[in-house]
Structures are given as structure tokens and as C-alpha cells.
Amino acid sequence: MKIDPWGSVRIEDYSKLFDEFGIARFEGMLRKLPDAHRLMRRKVIFGHRGYEMIVDAIVRGEPFAVMSGFMPSGKVHLGGKMVMEEIIYHQQMGGDAFVAIADMEAHSVRGISWRDCERLGVEEYILSLIALGFKPEGHIYFQSKSRTIQDLLFELGCGVNFTELSAIYGLKSDTKISHLTSVLAQSADILQPQLEEFGGPKPTVIPVGADQDPHIRLARDVANRMRMFFVEAREGYISIRGKDIDKKMLEKLEQMFDCKSKLYEAHLDLYGDYTLDEVDRIVREFEIKLGGYGFIPPASTYHRFMSGLTGGKMSSSIPESFIALTEPPESAARKVMRAKTGGRVTLKEQQELGGIPEDCSVYDLLLFHLVEDDHEVEEIYRECVNGKRSCGTCKKLAAELITGFLKDHQDRREDARLRLKEYEVVGVI
Image 1: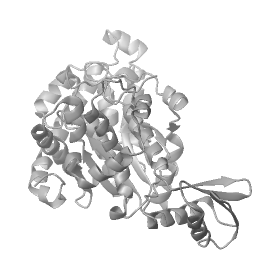
Image 2: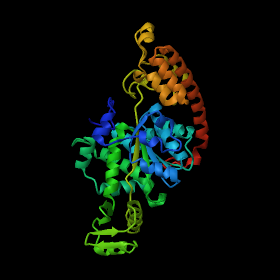
Image 3: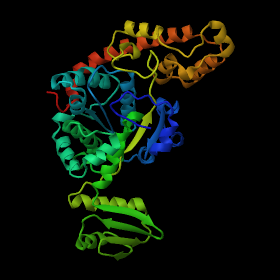
Image 4: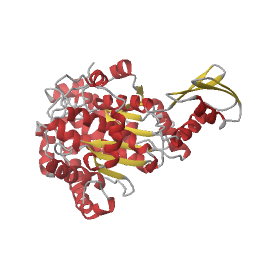
């Protein structure tokens, strides 16, 4: 199974992501969260990597961050809204929020001009993000205008080679250097919240669609690679191994622990009551004093893709397949009324056999975005599969709700335009 962040691959079997890429099922996180998001409760967010540490931070009221980004290559649609909602949810739960406008990626991969990157970044993405509830204390920036990202990108590039990127992304030998640079810029985006200027190492979650997992895997690998020390639990003790560290540094590190220890040329073993997390925290603090980063591998959540209104995956090249947050509400309503459903050929067959909501773009609209009440969504599902609900009924409901949502959202976007200066977006004067 190949996952391409820049392709138009439609994932038919999400279970393969668990088996082939090591993504964990999200269901186990639900009972631990004090207030799970709608997309989590409805299993739209289906998988994660390392999200346990985010749950712990939320429950304990400890620092954590949320980060994701948007490539400004066209109109923002409902798929982008999902990511925005996930960012805003984690910000509301206490996370320090970071949003990248990935103009380097748009310019190098899609050929979008810098001027259009800035225009689309502000007009399409940033205004909608603010309209949906993003708070001013969050961080919004354009990759190409952030000196912090440029510096971190360069440092990360010292530890990654083309062969590794090719293995992760399936890149060919004719891949442009600027494309490779934009890939590393995304790792810099993901790790930036853990820099000292933003409070140092902390659990960080990256909400993405499943097709973006290669970026997560690279960033997690790079985070480990940038460490100066490796901490691991052994049977009866904890071992700390230095990376290109002389014995004198290990001697200084040894003095920070009040327990029995044994020092070797390249590693230090601890025997005592320290937990692995406690040792790792102390080692990270020591590493930062030496000029290191002490990165924690980032966590991630993965959401399912909405069905395109015309069937298959949403595509920017097929306007009828998606609903943009900036398009006229009447246009969106017309698209809904023409959308592909999971209904039967005739009303009689629908009543006898029931519909197939799992194969219905209109039901996806209701499930993902338009109906807040979980019980109402469940009732719609039951009535559909039992043949008690027609496709026309759902279409009319969805058309009415999308019209109302877009009118309200576009009013909020105009208010966001007036408030834009509150947000100090890096790259926008």
C-alpha cells in the first residue's frame, strides 16, 4: 500500500494502515478524554500515533501543543475545515496552537506563485480558521517568511539524506531540490513548537488526513535522530546512551541523579526508583543546556476522507466534488441536491432493502459537519438502512444545513478580516 501526500490516492481499506504502517486505533483514547470532539466520537478520527501523551497532558493540565498546516494551492473546502476544527479543539483543551501556511510546498510542488500563495493563504485559509474559532494567542505563519523554520530546516537537513526521503515518499532521482526542501520544512513545522522560544520540549499532536502519514513518520524519525542521548528501560535499570558524547559529559549527567549508578565509556546505567519518564525529562533538560533540542517524537491523529459529492475522493480539479467554505451558499445547496448517494435505484428498492449510508456523500456531510447531535445522526443512519428514509429527505436536510452554515461562516470571515491584525501572522504585514 502506497501513501502519497501529493497524489489523489483513495484509501479503500483503512485497516491496512494499522497493519502495514503501525498506526494505532483511536477508540481506546475516547474513554480517557474528558470531552472528546465530535469527529472522535463518530470515529471519523480513526487512528493515532502516540496520542496517549496528549491525553495525559490534557487530563493533568500540563503543557502540550497542536500543529498542522495547509498548502495554499486552491480554495479551502470541508476537508480543510476538519483539520481546522481539530486544531481549534486542542487549543480549547489547553494546547499551544501552531498553523503553517505551507507556501514552500505549494510553490515547489504545485507551481503556485508566491503572490498567489500569500493571497490564498490569507483569503482562503487564515480567515476561515479565525472564523471557526482559532484564538489570537495561537501562532500562524508562512513557511517562507519564518526565519525560525528556515534555521531549523537547515539543521534537520544535516541529518537526512535523499535515500531516506526516497524510501519514505517514493521520490525519483529527478525530484527537484526545492521539493526536498519543502519536505524538510514540514518536519521543521512539526518540531517547531518544542523549541526553547516556545517553551521547550512538550508533547505535540499533528492532526492530519491519512495520506499525510509520511510527513509524520519522517518527523518522528528526525526527532529521535536529533537527540544527544537515548534513554531506555532495561530489566532492573534504566540505560542512558550518549551520541558522540565524551565520558566527562556522562559524569556531569550522573551527578543529576540521586541513586545507584554505573558509568561506562559511552553510557550510564541507573539503578533506583526513577521512572523512565522522570529520567527522560532530566536528560532532556541536560541536553538543552548543552545546546541540543531534546525533541519528543510528535503524536498524530488521522481522520477519514469525506466522499466526494460526485463519488470517489474530493478533487480540486472537479469543482462539483467538493464544497468550498467561500462559495455561494446557493451553489453549495445545488451541489448537494445533485450529489451521489448510497440509495437504491428506485424508492421501492430503498424501502425494501434500505440504503447504504457508508457509500453516501450526503450522509458524510451530515456525519462529518452538519449535524451536531449524535443521537440525530444515529437516527438518520437507522432510518436509512431500514428503508424508512429517502435520499431526497437527506438531501433537503443537508442542503438547508449547508446553506445556513456557509452564510454564518462567511459573515464570521468578514469579522475575522477586521480582526486579522490581532493575530500577528508571520509573513503578513
